[in-house]
Image (cartoon, rainbow, N blue to C red; front, side, top):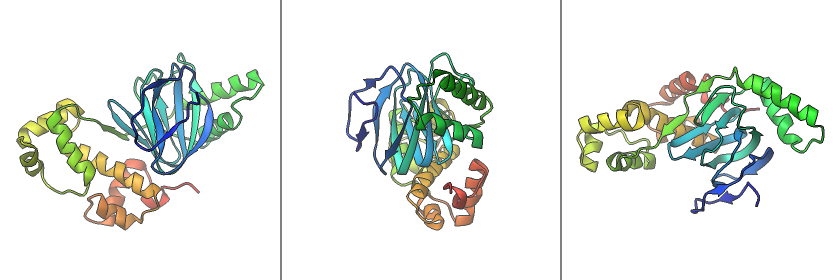
Length: 258
């Protein structure tokens, strides 16, 4: 069975594909790859578009020219925002230069990008020595890649799930935690504690992560920056651009690679 199977949000059984494939694949906007896991680690690189990888612990978002590390054994699914150019590189389970135990978004240097492309353009290269040399340099480059704060944790508490669902449906919802609490039947003090214990962050920080996630998805669909700012809850385009630049190191207008 092919490892790549596109879905349109339909439920599917979790698949075990022991060997993580090295492959290039195009995913149409809104499609994805159903839940599965490998015995190997895997690098997922978004050459174009935005990749979201979801596990039981939440969602990690890799915008264009970022890579996502998926540890061996992790049950995960993929979703494309915008037209996604997806490059997948499988790595042995004993090769983990950063010691990462959960999915993590990494910066991609120009050299690391070329190494990922070289691996995925010739996955069946008969020259075993060349493949090993490429892998060695790739792992060396991974060992110095910085990690990016692109994780949106998923709540387990039922009350918190209800509140988070409201904001997922409308990230521009400006209500305070107390006002949202009245809708879900909990005090703001209880909810503040739940955000810390269940999600490991404050409510304002989680809401900012949520808004950035939705912003990346909209930018992948070529939505104008001003519209993205409005739909994701920022008071102005300049406020959105400031948060985006501080998070990603560049402006939304420079989001797409040339």
